[in-house]
Image (cartoon, rainbow, N blue to C red; front, side):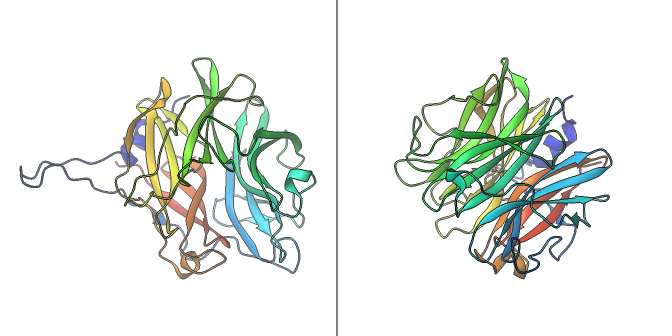
Length: 325
């Protein structure tokens, strides 16, 4: 089922021709914080004591389930589980549902989940980090509690243009051209973290779709240094809508939107000239990493979209975007 056109209208440019001198003016859509305080914060003295941030979310029945990155005092990350009836107040389980076990996760951990459901199976892409390398990995589940690792999807230091780590797999749940597609993060030869694209027939084995980044950094703009996929992209009648996290030369993280051709995920149709979301609250500016809003989760409701993000690599926040009426 395709997403409503209102979602695309929410993010597309509003154009007005004021005069020949001014030309075309881009107006930014507004995201509103549902809470000015974090909805999930570090707790206790063990696995989630240092940070709780960068959440993946999905609707499961009447509840919204969140898998969030939790970090202990040693900097090791696991995935915590929380659920909510209203998408704002979450109840957490006392123990993580995915903790580092494999050599590619040792001491660094399991980081930054993106969560989708295809058929009856949940898929979580995450970064496996062993204090040396970060690599894009996958696990599957039938209940969101018990997870089976499927290993490394995209090894570090490999690819058509990637020269370093791989991260941030955002999978499109609907097939295009008979294939699944995934946007991800790599590092080009000039040291810029940019966006790649791969396709798969089975969600396990992936082949790179482009010879160069599908979405590159733009010098002097909010996404000059980092262009990183956010939540899983949405397939709409107007295109593939992908929210992404951009950082400038000072690693100030803000949020952008890209729209790709619905029949060709390689073809960019439109991209934000200005960010649609930026750090404003103290807890988004001060934390383990300052000046960061990092969107990873999105849930569609009847009259709004809830967007879940990490604040300063320490907290979870939620914003909303309402379709125009």
